[in-house]
Length: 317
Image (cartoon, rainbow, N blue to C red; front, side, top):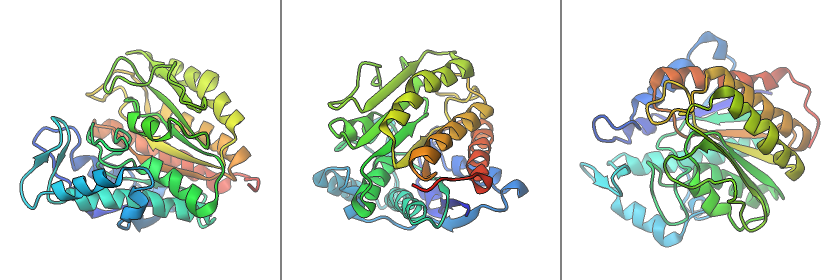
C-alpha cells in the first residue's frame, strides 16, 4: 500500500498576470520538493481531465457553462480583480477536478492508502455559482460528492487548513447533513466568512477562526479543542483535505505564522481520525501557499506524514 501523488504539466498553463501570487512557479516548487529522494516511494501519476458531470455535483449547470464560454483563446479574461482565465485555464481547472476524482477512486478502491493532488488554480473559494479568490470549481467538495455518489459513503468530511476560509465549500455543504466541513483560518481576512457561529443547517459546519500572529500553538489548540472532537463524533468514512499552505510564516498573503512541522502535525492528527472511522482513507487536494520556500517545506512535511501510513496498522473500515 502506498501514497499516490497526482499532478499534470497542464497546471502550468493556467497563466496569471505578472506578480500575481497564484503563479505557475507554485507547482514547480511543489514538484521540486517532492523530487527529493525521500519521496522515491511515492506512486506518481498524471491528473486526468474531469467530466462536466463531476463538476455539476457541486456547481450550478448554468455557471459551469458560463465559465467554459468565458475561457479565452488569447490573453486574459478577468472574472473579478483577483480571478482570471488564460487559454490554458479551462484544461487546468478540469484536470484539477479530474485529479481529485481519480485520487478519490484510488483511495476508495483500496489501491492506495491516501493521496496528494497538486493542482492549480485552487478551488475552495468557488461557490455553487460564483468564481472568486483565484478559484473556479471546488475540487475538494467535488471529491467528497463523487465518493458519496459512486461508493455510497454516508458521511464524508472536508477539512481545510488554508489560511483563508473556504467559503465555497461551506456554501456547497451548508444544508447537507452528510458532509462535515471543518476549517481553521485567519480572521479578519479574505473572504470574510468563517465565524465560529456559522454552523450550517445541521450543525455540520465547524469553523475555528484564528487571529493574526496566533502561531502554531493556537492552531494546534483549535484542532485539539474544536475540529478533532467534532470530526470524531461525526465519524467520517472519508476525509478530504483542502491543503492550503499559506498559513506558513513566510507567506505574503497572511500572518498566521505556522511552521512546516505544524502541517506535518495536523496531517498526522487527521490520519489518526481516518484510521478510526475511515479505514485510513484520506485524499488531500492542494489549495493556497504563495511563498515558494514555505510551500516547499510545508508540502514536504504534509506528504512525509501521509507516507507514514505505509507502515501504520490500519483497521478495516
